[in-house]
Length: 183
Image (cartoon, rainbow, N blue to C red; front, side, top):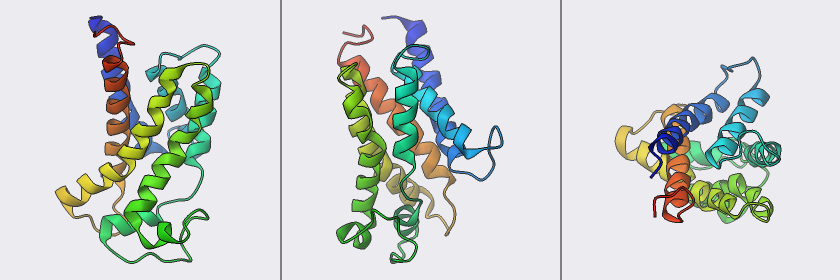
């Protein structure tokens, strides 16, 4: 096992949590939320082993586009247990996705990861992003609710957790599939 690569992957997982929080905050690293999202995308590219190659930009774009739809109505409802407000819901939250915040979180995780599916034609490892975010989106909120029972507007911890969970799931998938020499 390549321990230096493993240490690098762990560092990227930690940074993904910070990047997820940064892109969701009104304080931005380089004055712009656009740049923060691109940094998050670059960290994902690096996690998959594409920090400076032909897949770097497509991965950054897939991540950026996945983050665009909607804000946090589903997250806010799930965090606080309040009823969804149809006026504040994202454009994709209709029907059962508006009525069930947890189902909407799963859908939002799919939205974050679906852009990686066509890129998997070039690198099949990229498919790991879809289940990672599908799981991480609701799981981060669920853990936050169970651990701290947050007040309305208290988003930060679930954002850190989402980045860490998604990064850890992707890294575990890469190792379990033998892409990084564990098996």
